[in-house]
Length: 184
Image (cartoon, rainbow, N blue to C red; front, side):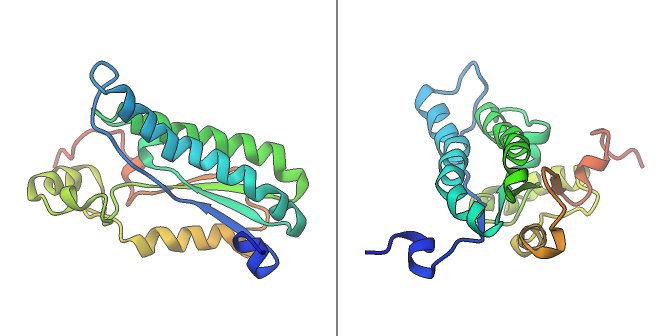
């Protein structure tokens, strides 16, 4: 019996690690179960999926694109577990790019800011929350999922054949700012 993509289709060329769950809380108040769930889905999921895919990707010179978050490149108030898990994705991407580049496997990451997905619906549909985001994001809106997918597709393509170990924010200009609100 054939199992998985490589078994069914004969090969695996690209792995996109794109999973997230968030739990609101600081280190002082987040529960252990919530901490473990976030770390398990985000950090452990990226590790175990990558480990399972590597033999197949080595065989064809494939690549991995990890989906992190600008929250892993910086941080957000009240999202300690999510920030830590997405930060782990950043450094796991670096480590895998170093360890597996010579094997012909490229590893890169994209880091979206607020994106209009089901997970972000409560924020996107809140006029108060969106007003705050518009003050921080120069493009003054949430990303559309297709805008993030286009960057993933580029990194997965032969057009990016010499790109390895990069962290690309897909954030509407958020990281271009010092973090201060607009003054005028």
